[in-house]
Length: 283
Image (cartoon, rainbow, N blue to C red; front, side, top):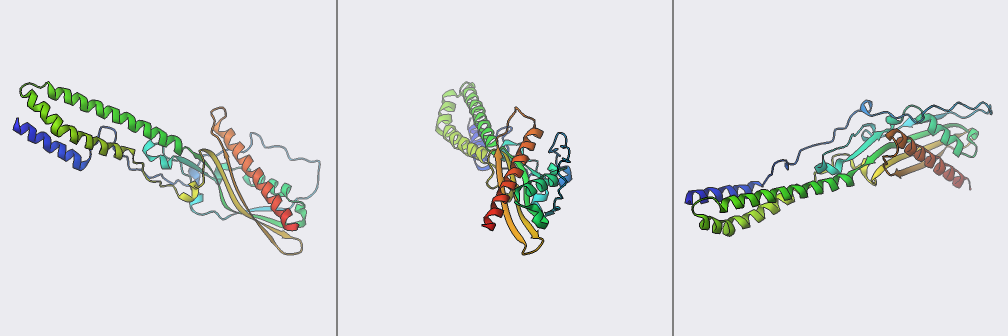
């Protein structure tokens, strides 16, 4: 009896000092892998490219897209699916995911937004940020909390079953019962609390904060650029434009459809802000 008590007490003390880990609760070490843009999925911005109109033969200025994105922007982040890593449950698609036709779309939006695009001999869009992100961090964190609660229930059930077996185990039942409530029960409570706190701890974010800051649940589109307008005569004008659009994720449309809609909103907002800024400069 004394030997069993000492052995049990030693095991309990070991459990408290090393942490009580139930099957399946060990935190998985994980860092979201930043993949090259070649690995990113591609989304066509059009089902079929609209035919070029032949009604107007007016010449249009050439619009050049200059890529000045950071190294972080020139990566594909597939996001983390493990609920304990909910801080990384955000998929970031680089600009390359929206080819082909992205430059055409931006060029058309730029020309349409300007009062007189032909007044400029060159137009350059210096892109410093252009990406889309599907933010599922809130859902992943909720899933983690639910999973942690379920594991707590399983742990409590296992401890209760152990208690029943201890009470009913042959000779010395009264002594065992008293030992359980005087020693084991307090230790069990402390161990369970320590284990629960450990399970509820979420892993730190590894995706660059610059790509996740300000993002909301669902789809996010980000476009930051400086448009340089070089007139046929006069001083070059520089107009900074910053766009952030959001849209809920839905099961009623395909991912391709949702991406097209997001990029369309992003480009439309870009043209709108550019036109506003140009007219404000002229007034």
